[in-house]
Length: 448
Image (cartoon, rainbow, N blue to C red; front, side, top):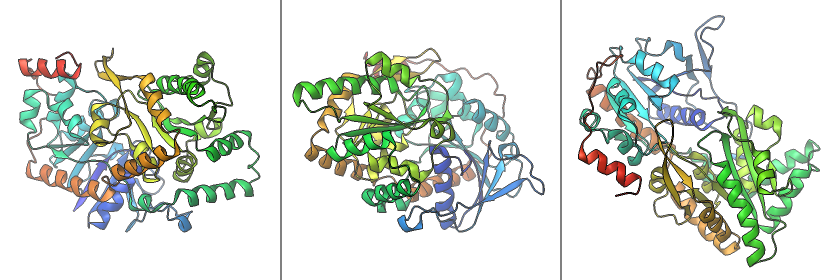
């Protein structure tokens, strides 16, 4: 069987890029041929219309390698749903996004089975956007919270009553990494390049030696709440001084990436506004912000910090906290319906409150006072170890193998239901606003 996956290209240094690669690797191991369709692949090359991709293993001694049975076929998304030798197509992402909606509109006309593997950052998806689900034969969601966001509408829920839960997952090598070995390996690379005297690195080493280096890695994007993060960190510095009096080495390492995302946050201006100095927050060098960072550089950041803080306004999943958790790092993450489900039972979820945003989403505003209090808990070395173990236990639930097995259930469902999807453009679908729907909205807004 050959499955065509429309997602990010497997070489792109982003969560979606990595997930498409990890998924392809696991599916190959299960005997499935994989073809990836993505926007950043060239539409036509000199001699063909596809690229064969197999990542080079540069750090084999650490085991940071993705093993593929054979190179993955990568096509530009312009060829999506045109190949007759593909048995099932799966479109991944948010169906109402500009790119994904174009993919779905085209694939809705295909005679082949088409599945959707969908996320959303909103607690409820408006009916006009949720109706995009009528254009696929079967649908899978990353969490039950995401499923509810779409299926709260009666007609959509009835059409996809047999949806599939497909959680994201991490490859096997993540669970075998030794953070100290990863850190020392990278420090040796720094020394060989003559970069060990970098002022920012010295500050990182100083804070790390005291166990008080916090960190966040994320793209420049409206849903990543750098405002709440920096506000909480400014408050943490004050709380620390009031309670312990040893706060000069408490620092934040910020892996701020502009290469992917949407330009939103003026981090330096926020620091100035909040009275944070350059010695308080160490920011990823500008050239790496623009270029993006490799998997090795990301793991170096995770291994350098003592605690990972993920302030967010909404997530369809939230991969970085789980990645950091596999290295035994304690996590503080904003409480949203998705993070509550993914991190079920984990204590350090920062409180938030739902807000209706202008574009028609219900997102979450982080309570930065509670975020600071949760961060302050991790000033204790005993608590860091305890919460680090708990975070690791959560991460161990989510493997790439589990993702691939669930993904194949979605593929099977699409094959069984082939032909039920409607073609784009949809005929006018009237969504009745029921009392049940209104009750869910009030519940989500904490007004019920």
